[in-house]
Image 1 (cartoon, rainbow, N blue to C red):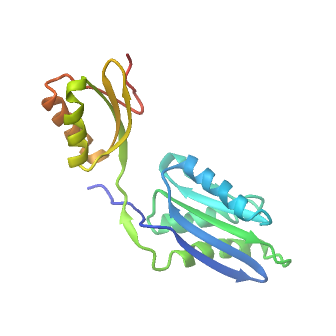
Image 2 (cartoon, rainbow, N blue to C red):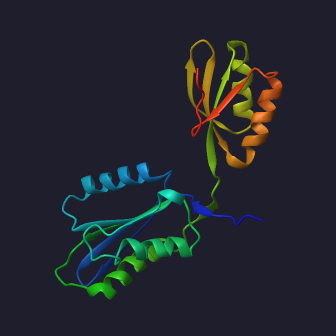
Length: 204
């Protein structure tokens, strides 16, 4: 049986002061690395005077640990270890540091960044992570309404739609339900539905 992984229901925040340095923490659910980088850039816009903005991302093959100028291995990796220890996936932890003039040393930095994330996660509400995949489906115009209804009633998400010779939709579906969804639509459309995915898109 596959182990259940968790993400956060919503962003959580924390703040710590250690030897006059301020550590401002946020841990939040994210879709992947692109969103994480955009959020870090937003933080720099909010905190242009910060000394460091270190971050750790748990997102499968897109995971990352960034020290942002702190000594190697003293920030991003300790932050990531907290996320891993708590069984979190699809989350970004950021710590904004304003240096207070007193150096903490390598061990002190590890404890500070590890502790900042752990403190922010106290009482955080975790929810099971539902892995999703994007399917592309092309159907004749006469079947557009049918497909829309099946997307809605199945709790799936219509991401994009394009009208050409046929109707092509990009549909976000929980991985566990993708196989059944394809079979149902193919049956209802009597074999007239053509399928692709984000990894193998439809071709004309």
